[in-house]
Length: 345
Image (cartoon, rainbow, N blue to C red; front, side):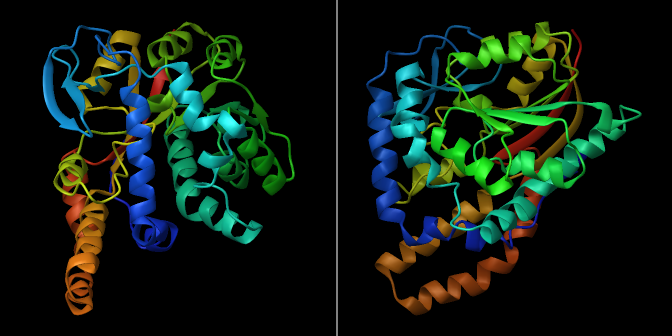
């Protein structure tokens, strides 16, 4: 099953801080890039471990490499445990959690309904084509964050669900919002063992695989565990947004910044299938490339030109965003891809 596109209507409110707090967020992105640059030099591909050679572009004085073996885009430094902890876990993960926590149950449920219910339904629809009874499966969400995806699964009638998260702040928030204890605290070193020993049948890594310091080890662990039948990932892709970010250096980078130090391509995802014996059963291609272009020009106009020029840009381009993005999505060039694999152990 292949699916393309997604409405961006709800994103203007959810992502409004990207417009309002550009300078602050840009400064933060630069600081994270400096931390990343301090890490040891990366010599091999983050996806396939082959030697890196071809620099495809440089951003914030960091070289990014195109892997000649699998087509992956890797940053020129290692994602060390210390680097990952500095973003997600230090100070109980409170700083990173600010992006995902909401002040009240109503706004929390709004994010569940608008962002995560479609993801959960996409997973269930794919599993329904493979299984007689989806309800008989058990679900484990790694990097569960504030519990949005688990909450969505629960809304769709699934009960055998649990998750692990490295941010203590988000674990507490997730369980509070859902009046449950289905998200448990772990550290980065725990994740491989959790996956190796889990009895769950479906593993989800929603916006997580790219943040791990050891994705190759994690994929090996998934393949070797006979209990795991399906893997659901959402990963950032090498897309037009990268070129927008390179062209607008004074606009906060949403896509290749902070914990996003490497990017997948359709080729590197195909390489994963071949290497680990996974079979793709469902794909959903959609992204925020046109939203990123819109935001970059909107903020630039607000800083350098009249309010009328900004308003005119909004009037002209806003109605075009979804249609233009759909064309990018259909060509599998979107900034994000959701993919479900059948795991053949």
